[in-house]
Length: 225
Ligand SMILES: Nc1ncnc2c1ncn2[C@@H]1O[C@H](COP(=O)(O)OP(=O)(O)OP(=O)(O)O)[C@@H](O)[C@H]1O
Ligand SMILES: [Mg+2]
Image (cartoon, protein in one colour):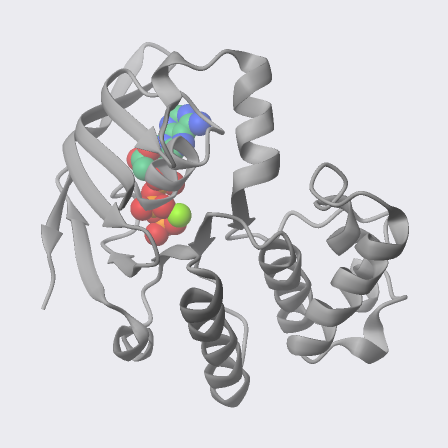
């Protein structure tokens, strides 16, 4: 089954009259349960691609289908719902809510997926434990190190157990040992739950966990080595 279908996708930004063409006819097909890494130079459009796939930003033209939904045809409300229920984001700069504790940050993403607060708490605990942060559940983001904040962001995305996880440099602030354990957890979820992962990273160590590695260059995805 195909989970992601992108054909001839275009995206440009206009700032102060200047147009930047970022994606110029990008193609991508991902099978359900696949784990793919996207590499590419800074500014090549990796985050842009994730934002389009997650329904955070709109494309200019092209085909963009995720989990059977044509994102280019969805209204605001439907896009919100898609984002909340089907996608887990691990953002490049974490995007944690500073006024919520670690466990509350994880729970926040579960409101529209799980029925009650007991389930939400249990699920959040489970994933905080998996990323090794049980003892920091009641701490606020500013009381955590960068790597710990990143792990909260990872727990938040995984806890949703969504169809698709979009990760932007998910281990950028995490030491090698912890990186191995986190990637192990992601592989397990990939195999047990059939979660599809698109992981953007400059880290070549992550290659060994991937089904495929692609390079984004000049607005298009190319097969990597
Ligand atoms: N909201 C925006 N408005 C205007 N230009 C933008 C916007 N977002 C991104 N861009 C531009 O689009 C290009 C691609 O940016 P993007 O963030 O996708 O790159 P990236 O591959 O993720 O880079 P990095 O590896 O540094 O994170 C850049 O030239 C950037 O300046
Ligand atoms: Mg980026």
